[in-house]
Image (cartoon, rainbow, N blue to C red):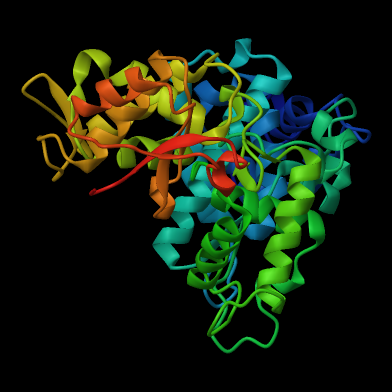
Length: 429
């Protein structure tokens, strides 16, 4: 036939076959890996298209490489209720989020560690959204666990690659890379939690309890077990000490305590902790903020109050980086309409703007901290708000009286205070 062939087919151009192959290989050549060409080898045509057809984003080699690596680590986790693959939907949604993020963030300027955290957060948020859309359960895992399954994707000098899964808490979403698995049927013979490795159990329990604050080990075991049952990862009719589920969760907390994922604020108590504000998952901060704002606080004081609340709940030694995280979460919740501003106050939508029990408890904790008194808040677990102080601290009693609180003194304290003398009040008393 007398049809002419475009010179562009031979000389190159955006749609040139060899040009596209070279560009893909060049951008995805990752010197951080033992096998620099591994990303290119594992990607499929639809994966390449999802990344490279977005010309503005694909002009940034570093972010492209990290998106590909992060996707490949997690693509096997994107499964529907019947086990069907959701990889294309996963990457497509993740790229939409990345493009929006790149519009106002200089991703190309980040170092490898920060870029990994940012991209990991987007990927994990996408997995959560995918899980909600298809009705499957989410089982959080640290990135080191994912890399243990695919060591070829581990950067040579990465902490996650060189340290065991138990050595550090999951990076925040940025936070918290997550594993996603189909929800198991209620009558499964071997519940998901039983099938996990010891390190995976620690990560799972840590993720569940992070943000719940201080409690006795028994309280935390029961809280984690209830969450696992709700997610169909374990089955039991009555949780009893010494039973299989109780023992597995208890051992996970003990192991996590040795590995630094749980601390001991006082004798007999435990708390899931984050190593830094930068590594704190946004969804944990969301949970804490919404719980605290069940009752209103002034807009002027909201950020400082929330920063201190988050710091105490997750056991951070200082507030470094927390203000940025809290501010970002508050803006997100305000944009979603989950928080509202009313009469110079901010509160959770549908919550009371008056001074309720939650306000009083938080205000009491603030008073004690200003007086230099250690506070242990077990109210979220149905326990008391403890003030570790001697009976002589009548200044505390007087100031709590302004909130119509009548604290009681216990010379021997409780398990939560490590048997140290303390004052205490309870919610709704």
